[in-house]
Length: 78
Image (cartoon, rainbow, N blue to C red; front, side):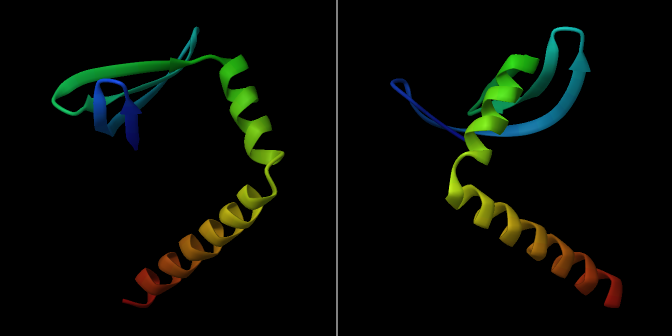
């Protein structure tokens, strides 16, 4: 993932995902710093709603699913 902020542009390298009582916790590194972000159930519903209401996102998700299936089939043949 990429984080673009007033402090600069940083990559967020996701290392772990945990489910906790307060939400989904993504742990990783942002640039050289350890970072953690918590996504509540309200945050997740809002993100899913935004994605599902955007027509271009449907095409992106469908292409992503087909490319994953293609990659799995290719690996199975090897």
